[in-house]
Image (cartoon, rainbow, N blue to C red):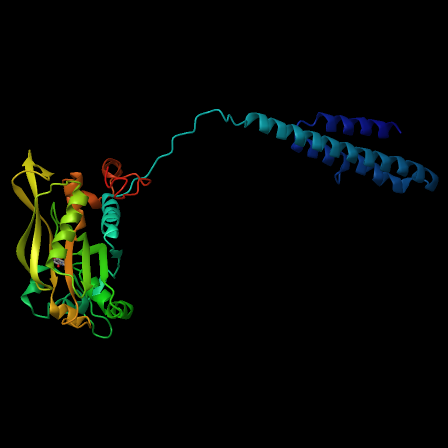
Length: 366
Ligand code: DAH
């Protein structure tokens, strides 16, 4: 009897004093565990006379129930106070100013591609793509540069192993093969046959064996192509003049066509824009120097025929321009190689806000 009340007060005392769940569990084990005090009492029942066993057994069971009840009560009290302590210590002060987040920037090349899409998009051009790894036929032969033609030497090509079927492969040296890919497209041919006009720009990566301050083995070009039945050289000149004025944001831009040669155009012209040089820096739009910015011409009848269209019916113009080059000129970036070094300081300086989408009405550049 004494035993029982001593065990009871020891067990209830330990439960009450348990400061956390671990201490509470220790108290539970001390009373109800395999070697616990209450379990010990249970074990003595076997040695008692039946009358005593019944009466004492009932009291031990009652004690066991009481202790279990106290443990549960203490457990929820401890749980509630732990939660309360946690809530108090982790209180959010909603009046604090937000922490500044680091913002990424758009690379000037992506920015200029978006500007090209905005300007040519207004003129009715759509964006077309082609593969970086190109076959020799699309890169050269279809564009009126047959095998062994000396014009192949104008482009320092990365030749790749032939395909299993013997097709010679290259890293495309220009975006011009997408001209051929698009004209060969059956849907495009049907659209042209129905009297429509093809107008595409092809911004993308190009590759040549070249490496100095103004040449990198990988660079970017944008191709332009218009094919219909009536487009002539006057349209070419107007289109490129409007483009240059919009892109460089100079209304009175000095602009000239200079006769040139490309195998895939006849006649061919290069475009120069007016600029001035001061302290090694170029200023577009004024002065007495000329800067070459692109190649262009009327698509050669051989190219139109190679691409499955009748040159007696269809005609049009094409142009090709270095995206990196016009980005350097517009945004005053001196070294082309820095474009591809992924230096975050450079990107922070020359990069563009991702939220300012270029458009002709809201502004193109910075
Ligand atoms: N593909 C030429 C090059 O990379 C650039 C070019 C010139 C493209 C004249 C054209 C064009 O479409 O008409 O050197």
